[in-house]
Amino acid sequence: RKKVTLETLNSLKNNKAHITMITAYDFPSATACSSNPLVDIVLVGDSLAQVCLGYPSTTQLTLSEMIHHCRAVARGTTHPLLVADMPFGTYMTSGPDTIQNAVRLIQEGRVEGIKMEGGLEIVETVRKLTDFGIPVMGHVGLKPQRHVASSGFRIQGKNTNSAKQVIKEAEALQDAGAFSIILEGIPKELGRCITERLKIPTIGIGAGPATDGQVLVWDDIMGTWSGHKAKFVRHFGDVKSERDAAIQKYVEAVRNGSFPAESESYTSGGVDWSSLSV
Ligand code: KIV
Ligand code: NA
Image (cartoon, rainbow, N blue to C red; front, side):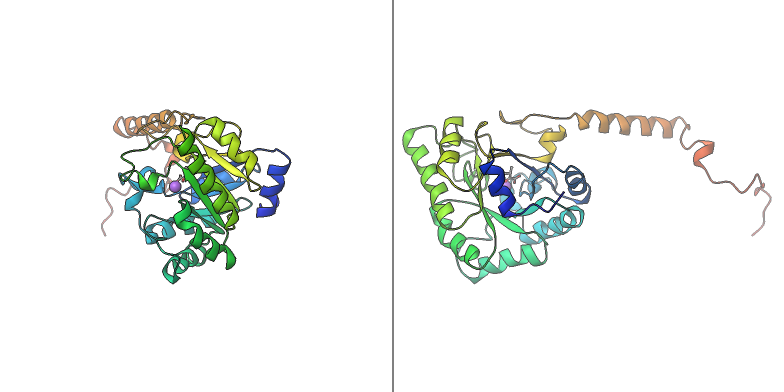
């Protein structure tokens, strides 16, 4: 498939073709996403913190850790557009430090665009980055990097005031030059409303079926994550059972001596080394 560009995403929205986005964190997951021509966007999400690195929250993830994983994902990515999350704390001003952090993700991490959680407080930053030609994806609604400040992972936009706030943020990010926007954890009616109001593609996660695309975390798709399962998560595979069964069969075969078999062993042609003096 031809390389996915920002123009491709716009035409997918205009043709009402659903955009597909998956997170990846390493070379094998990136290669798997690239082997399916229908995957449009690969995201090195900061969910990396929990699902890959075992941190309790995305707020612990550093820029260097993110870059390390981006490089591996980039080596396995072909046609999908490659986007990475700016980690918590790396985009708190619209000044040179934030721009430098975004540039590091592109030059060292080898990603093509960056994603940032936030609303009006990041508009200036988004404008600055997009002015310099760095593609920015927004992320509004439930913003996981704020889970402590929000006293948990709360669905947003459930009442009129909160819904208006999410719409205002999405529109401001579009005006600032964002090429697309993630809508997380909002009622499906609000997901539809924002998708209809915006010219840029919306990608939903827990935002109902009417967004221009959907994104899910790799481990949620595979069914390998044993932590909390949100309402919006569907396991499309049961890789966990396969994986655990493979470990079980391996340890049994080692313990009962059936692994390795003759056919899995090298041979010197039956020479007896037992009396060999070295
Ligand atoms: O970090 C992540 O995986 C994300 C997506 C789920 C949107 O931000
Ligand atoms: Na994220």
